Length: 384
Ligand code: ADP
Ligand code: MG
Image (cartoon, rainbow, N blue to C red; front, side):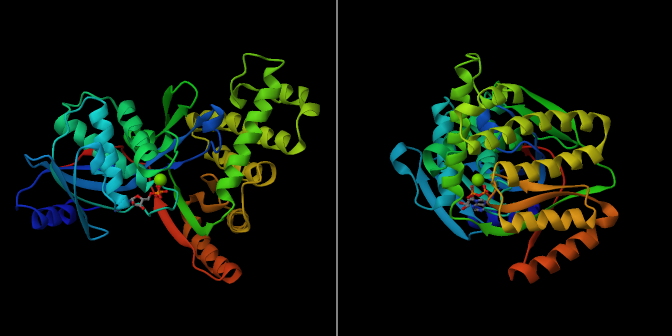
């Protein structure tokens, strides 16, 4: 992402002057899948792909926004009734409304923005978009009164209330709290967080996008959530302090085995093991033991595929290719049923692995794989 790219468009589309320039990144999640709504841990990090926005107050009550990538221009007011129709602009409008709701006196501004987070690939381009504007408006109109967690919640609520997506907090959290050389372990029950060192020397992180989108994904997702709730309800009869599956042990699950379905048992087993895997990976990271990190990534993939039943042929295929090539760690990233695998690959294996994956994937599925290299980087910030 190049500041001159954004700045030249900003100058051209507005009055020739310049504003302040901000970036906010997309994210990966190293491990901790389907743990968020079970009160467990996730382990995301900000990536070196994001959204860059130039912003300048314009002395009016109108926002004038230019999307460089969409080549689309939209103007909107700041009242609740002024919601724009273009979906990209609704993210910006939603952030404005939620910032106003937090007491920030947002006024009109001119803005142009562009990004290099692939859209809808599971790297959270939407959180990058929300976070860059939450960060910018806090700086320009709010004297930076809101802290990063408040900004993350602004982005999350914007997405809930103005974009129709009931997302969790992880993506916005990672986009704002991310730090180069670190992942963030977030406890989704308490919102406590801790930075974990991530400096895998001699390794690269690469995502292979299967571009599979399964129609059943959202109903299966709801079904898994129901499974988790059913098991918690059964365990609570014996252990009233249990609030989430995160609070359950395998012993507790075994106590209620006769009271729940075998599907629910397997789904809960996956979650209980996955919560523990995040903690194990954090221990391994603190020792610089990336072989264990990689092994746990495979364990997550197998758990998601065999126990949680949230994989699909494309993802299992890509996971097998990684294993056969000797890749250190590989797993489905995101909710499953489609999307990407995240791979931790030794530098010297990178070319062979990606080449091989492209070739055999195209043979098997008749379409091209998309490949995204990522590096762990800093969170939202001003850059000019
Ligand atoms: P993701 O998994 O990448 O977050 P979403 O569907 O949640 O996918 O969000 C993608 C939406 O975010 C796009 O449809 C668009 O409205 C907006 N968006 C993301 N990146 C850009 C961009 N570079 N330019 C314009 N809009 C963007
Ligand atoms: Mg999104």
